[in-house]
Image 1 (cartoon, rainbow, N blue to C red):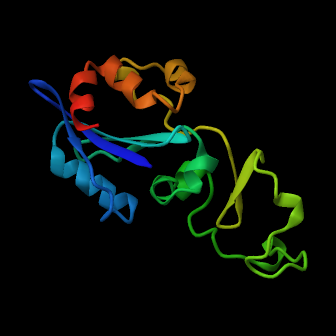
Image 2 (cartoon, rainbow, N blue to C red):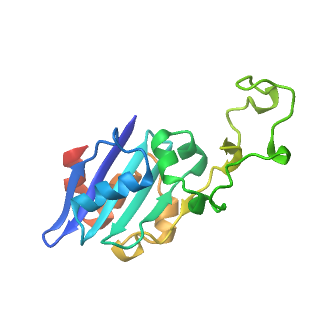
Length: 180
């Protein structure tokens, strides 16, 4: 189960709106949605999936968006998480998705057939588009520093209540709860 909300900073404080992500297919779609909420002020897109991961996308006017994801591997298994996990965020070159002979899995299994060595659910890393993604935070760890959430505090957040904690630090806890 997902929860997504927009927090837009206005002259009167923060305004929250419940966000439906059904029509969002790309990061550009998500950024456009944020800019529709406010094209001049700071807008935060907050996304979480049931205690697995959370993400923050910050849009400040026409500046490039800033992104933070708490657990890259968990987000990679989610359709909304995949939207946030750009090549740049994962530290790979754009277009590196093309497989060559060196990166093909030639272990003798058919596509879709499980590989017994990878059956553990406690794996530290997951494969995304043939690349290994670790269960670690990725993105801009200073995304909320000027809004009252330090890098250390952001990294220490528990996925279960991260968005509420962020909203509380921003002084927007009540408005976020109205859309939950």
